[in-house]
Image (cartoon, rainbow, N blue to C red):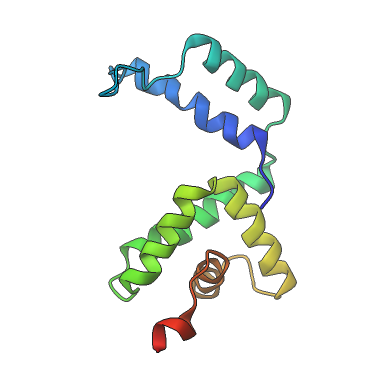
Length: 134
């Protein structure tokens, strides 16, 4: 999967809100859980240098919606939910979104087809339905 520096920077910039709302607590080992002002400035500069396009933001929004619906659905197995959550944990949302959108284009899946998008995302994240059926 392609790593987008700007999307990684956006995650770092999100730490700004933690310090503003009193979330500036130390971890158990004594290290700060909030980015330093220098780290925040570097992340903001990286984001400003290569901001996501409106299409990338729209795709990430759709992907997040698919993931949220999948995780909330009582009809989706725990195995699929765990696979998707693990994939989201290991990969930036922007990266997952770009790859999902590219795969949907290759497979002629409409952008707003939630069911097929969720199935494709599970497949991309390593869920093997044939393995689960055994």
